[in-house]
Length: 225
Image (cartoon, rainbow, N blue to C red; front, side):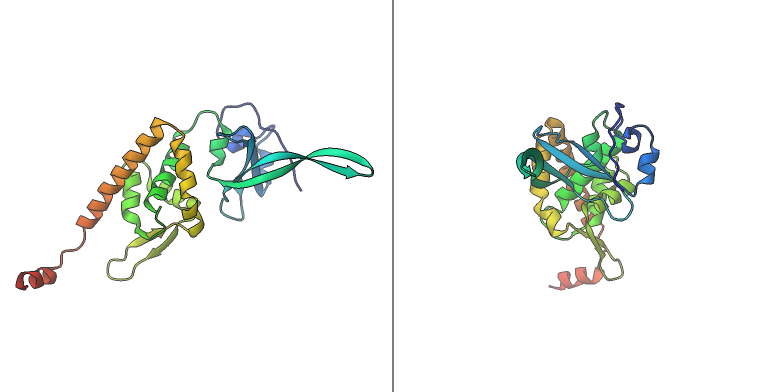
């Protein structure tokens, strides 16, 4: 069964609270979709999925609406048609408007830091990335949730001290340039956040390298040489 509802006039960025009449409608559904105007292009619309019980959150989709004429039983009807479908990096909170919550802001920052660190499509140690996020007051729980939303591929190395390794999936790596362009449009604050993240990530990487275990046998070989 498919049900369609308007949102209420509250300024909340919480989808459940934005549901008109009663939150019970959203509670009963297995999957809820939200359609809104594109934040950066009034000619486009964006469809996001705030709730889904059976799969991880998919990417938002944006599209244009074009008019087409259909002839039915000898009569012409002008109807709308979805055109120019594209993937987008908008979360439902980005589309809901209102006052941006501290939690959603930190989630967006975590996604940005992770995307920057894994932008080359190669595997990287997770510890410096996590440290870069925690250095700007983002909890580890929020970091892991952001990594999950980005579809980060994870594995552990073998050995006495296994390391967690992260890598963006191929599709996410291809879309990283698109995310960077959007971040650049948000003004000076986005640039400052990016620079802070890069500095924090660089510092965390140096710290991680300095913690590598000391190997006396290696030093002995170097002295003999």
